[in-house]
Length: 551
Ligand code: F6P
Image (tube, rainbow, N blue to C red; front, side, top):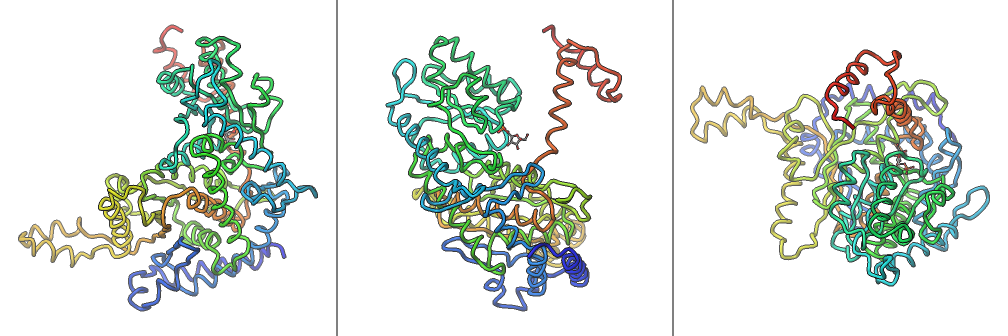
């Protein structure tokens, strides 16, 4: 089967009518009317609970969304991705990141060739390398043990490792890990400034090995090592992760310190490939394999479970419902887990670089909104910053809360109970809100006089009926993290299929890179600003010139 556009458009119109006719759908009343609502609108996969009962949907919504998934051929497109078809149509590439986490005996074909042995052989080399570094048998130029790793990379070559290493701190028994991504010299200066080159291993991570930020920072780090230890020491202090092996060799990094991957792995899907090397160094090969296994479990669920009980598909359908049918421009992701502090940024790239598109697969303008703005911060910190907006702002933002039942700190169980209570309380507060009458009564019973109560009550009124999804797992382990990330990857793909866009390219990042290259000599004072620049840019350049220090 393939996408049936006529059918799709007709269901889309039906869904829009349904949203309009039932608006505002009262989630609170839906619970009052149906004591089994939670059972109907939640899914369980082992210990992972996916609760979407606090969403503004009913059975009819789900039925229509399910029909929409079939009209867009979500199952067929999913299978095409798993089959290695060139689903990334603008680059004529497969998107086979799922193969990276498949068990070694499985098979994934690309151009009639099973690619799993290639994947496993890189993994085995990574395991050997990280085992040696961790044990101290692969040493620094002076024969000492490496104490620190610096990952130099940006976007997908930074966000995955930094997010996962923070997430898995309780498992971190390898060298300390640091990250340099920004072209801002402050970043490389601050990170290297706190380290000893004698015991630091630098990993240059770049799929293309052409990214300006990464190569510039890597060259700086190379000088830092060479100046401190001598040019001959560089080879023992530099490793590379890339799909451009020739460029790595030109940079001067030894083959035995180089870990490849393939063009069919998108940067934002590359944590499962050698981009995960810093994570493996931090937590060890065994935990890294469990991370892959968790993702694979979710892949299997996504691949083989019926649409109506398929968690990534349901998350994608709900995302589509809120973004396209309800027209909510953003979604907020709140991990109630401090160690997932980089997860919102990671998901921001995954989602916004994948689905921030304005043309369909055939290049025509899209007729519906595409991917939303994705943003968030860990709870409870976010509660004291922007939750005001979520509860009383004029825009509705669907909220996705991620929480783990148990903590890694048994001695701090009481704090974890407070964390759990806060998470549940926020979902209830979003749902129930607080009416004017209730606020007024509360004020009166606190002893405030009638005039003052009337004045204050509107400010203390919460509209409620604000949707949320809760994703809960037993404990934040490597396995659970792998499962969670794969869930979000597939959700993004599902939304992309529904929107009929290419979720695997990112042409929108190129123009700014080109213009930065042409502006550099002007900013550096080596060229005059051409008159083709707009008035604002010329004004900004003039201001820089007026105040710049002598270089
Ligand atoms: O500029 C965007 C981007 O291409 C991302 O897609 C990618 O993750 C990042 O840059 C880094 O690219 P590379 O790994 O090739 O250095």
